[in-house]
Length: 100
Image (cartoon, rainbow, N blue to C red; front, side):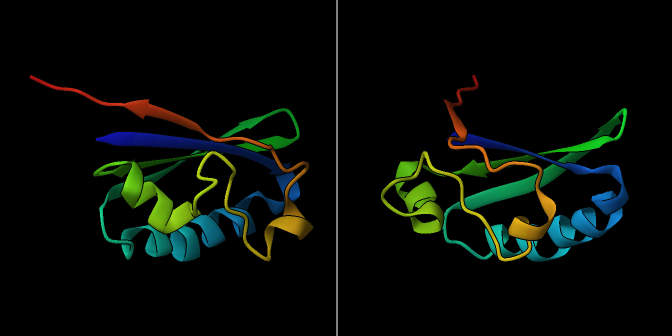
């Protein structure tokens, strides 16, 4: 299994609106991709910045590519991100997951 983590930050005044987008549009979109095993959004505030981490789980790297494309280490951004994010990060992080 593969875990994928993306981070984004928005000004605090856009936090609630962005959280609605993440919980509705983004999470629903992830879960519709074959091979997705779950999606969670983490949200915290720090001073006047709201941080979001999106954690998704995938069967394998091919499932990640069905979502993100061949350049799967590049984040997938949505239309609303241009108006809300403080900056667009260039990479996401992936981990191989194991359990016994």
